[in-house]
Image (tube, rainbow, N blue to C red; front, side, top):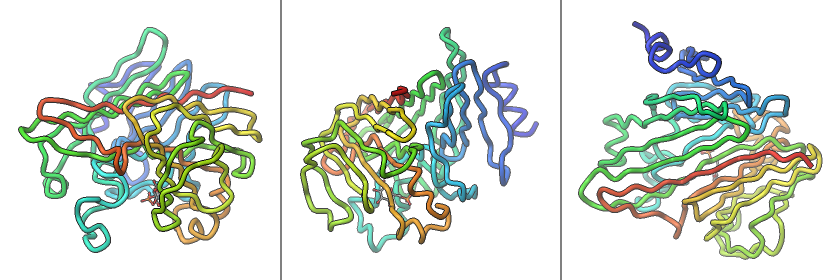
Length: 306
Ligand code: BG6
């Protein structure tokens, strides 16, 4: 039996969920229910699209995205785990064996459960498959589960279990690309007064005086930010509410024109229509998990019309 047939037999739900082979044979979970539709690629458990019924898409996917086995896709919700950015305890600049943003976004995941909820939403649970090559980079016994609930809101939870006998430390991020009307018409609230690491200014430590506005390349790790934040979009006349738990950092990223032009998978001018607001645990907000324990990072993305 081929994999698509097997997945459909075990996990498809009539009127909610089906599986197919997408571009380059990459396996896709397609969700369509009364609230929303979403596409999730099994490589990376990567949410590519999410769109509430009768509304505009919430998640941005690059018009030039490439779907290549073992490569990260530009857009959607890449999972950065068990390290965010470059591997911090190695020598990231010289050791290119450690891929940026960890091993989870390019690895294969398996579906371990699917269900329709009483409120009409659809829930799928994925588990990361750590192959031999990945285990060399991350030799800690663990299990990683990803629970995606597609409803009127998009709810995602990343749970790291320490199944070994020693503690380990992770950094992580849900590297979500949001659709925005235009970068000039957007600001992010909830980070005012927070300290951040400015990655485009030599990792200097700074404090955010006001709501975040993006007028040039922005790559910032806001620290100790457990609070929710809001992407206020004056052009699309909507707010995207990011409510989270188990996440003490927030990353805001937009490559701006010059850097975007160097990226083959961005598309000309498309940086103006996207903004990454990433719920994360990074830098000193790294999380240490004791043997037999787990850590959960959970976010809810909700659209509010203004
Ligand atoms: C952000 C990082 O989260 O992701 C940036 O802070 C990085 O430094 C960006 O450039 C995109 O990363 P990648 O590996 O998907 O191109």
